Length: 305
Image 1: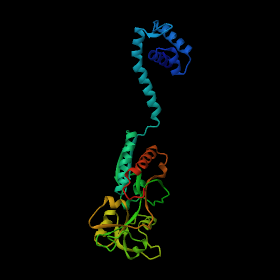
Image 2: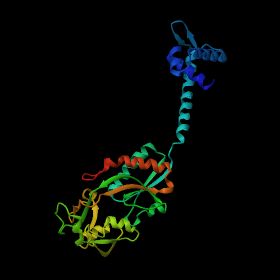
Image 3: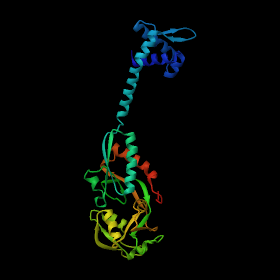
Image 4: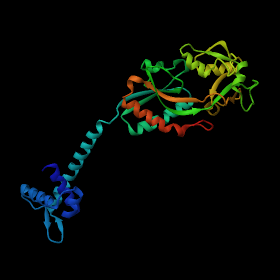
């Protein structure tokens, strides 16, 4: 029996009506009748008792139906799996994140991704300030979620998944502590730490501006920060201030630190990044889509998104 013959027999065995069988299979009633007669001739049995009023399965027909049904279902499932196999995502993916908010977004993106792609494992690693995009370049990460700007010719900047307003981070006894806001211009009297040399200058200038809007120089100390924790240590010691974003007010509540909004600084965008040569990788494309979809759900209160 050919596949079409099996399908006609099984549908007729279910419908027990030649017209409805033909309608379901989008074929003619004559083809249904012709096919059943052909099967009966081949097997030399009667599969259906047919009258002008009804169609009934014979005992032999019922036994053939029961025997064929699981095999037919197995064939359909095998063909479905074959069709889907070209879209199946397998292998592994390593995703890096910078900041607690980014870690939350990556975790939610991983849940969404794994739910639809269980055959692809996802490892999550932390990215520090001094790493910048080095983990993408050395292959220890396939995707990064971190703050912008990133302007590198070999790195693709994907969708922005969170936008955060900027704050200045000061010690609890600093003159800014307790203020409702601080103007960008007022930072001219303060001192930022020096950022690790692995961080490109254009990114340093965005995260720790060198000049106020009027052109006043903002000083740099001799203290070098390679991680955000090192920056906070300098803040609590009262030696420097640093700039951050509103997620810190939610995730890093500390009695020795104050966060004061700086409304005239541009917001901080967090985006997904990957190697440009991997633009066509379905693992990366699908993970980026899953994480972008999780962006609004995980955005802390007070954020710009």
